[in-house]
Image 1 (tube, protein in one colour):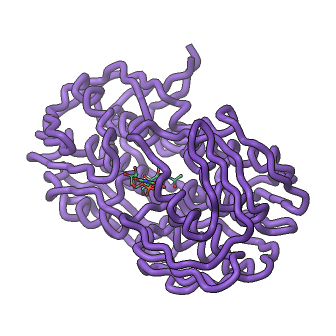
Image 2 (cartoon, protein in one colour; image 1 turned 180 degrees about the horizontal axis):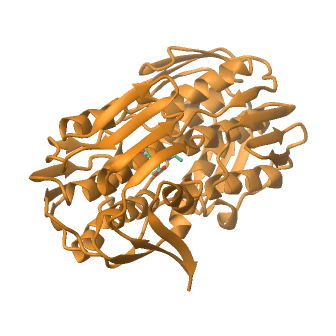
Length: 417
Ligand code: EPZ
């Protein structure tokens, strides 16, 4: 089994190029199913979730090839195929095939998706949207979708959901008429999907707002598209620098997508340089305790940065309260950080963290994607050696996180035991 070994106490210095966004490219890859031709995705991250999605597209008959950082998807000859649990187990993003397959074939037959066990992760909002567009759905062990045709509709989401919004957009772009999507998620990954689809000939307006208008079109055309940088990977490296100390330039990071992350870090004493081509982050003195952190839908504080902030809070000067409002089981890092000497008290969906002066290296168990990254962040600052399991989670979303940190000066390696 592979694990990560870290010897803490080294500063991070230099520059790292931030990879393409996992959560932006997964819906775009599903959207490629709607495009009869070869679509090119430049700056496409080479991560396990993308490989899982590419394997599904191939199973559906697409021709998928990679040339360095460019992934090409030719969906001319795709056909509906049942995607079973084995196919779907790896990533939550595969649920986005539901909207794309229904739009292309008026039918879809797939198992429930996998993904990080950070909560129940139901799909009721996805099904609500598709049903509103005229799709008949049977949900049991598998999800069966069928439609005589997709018809424009007004879809009102009771709560914003990133994936359900993306599925609704994918189902609406080829539906006859004008669809209104209301109370949609406004995450950058939804905005990027809309821009990608419009580049392919879709007609989506209201992009970035809570209300989207989708004018159905007859057909989409292949595009040569550059995947935007991954805001959560950028935020994760930011937290790594502020944990270990040092100064790093995050090439390609877009501060406009990270305002809710940068603000509390700056207030806690982190130093930033904001440039057109990236963000410089520098740790000066010990971080002060953060003001109250509450995860919220965008533009609020992102839940995908919550574990990384808990790790940073363990060494901050004061007490931090971090409240998780999106997922019901996203504090799995807490018992692991306590093994290192952290002082954390869990009160339902809140973590109360009293900063200490030092953490001690320990044997740590990563249990989800962002949590495993957070354990690495803590280990970088700890005294002594840490071993961290869960590399399989990291590799789902980070392109060589260990290599990236090593290149910045960390004493870190991936070992197979
Ligand atoms: C996307 O997940 C991301 N994953 C998640 O990133 C991210 O944490 C999440 O959005 C929130 O920003 C991908 O894009 C592949 P949601 P998604 O639907 O779409 C509830 C990572 O680390 N809900 O916005 O699954 C749900 O339980 C991952 O990269 C329903 O109740 O998130 C949650 O409480 C983790 N019914 C809330 O909505 C539904 O049908 C928000 O979930 C759908 C969701």
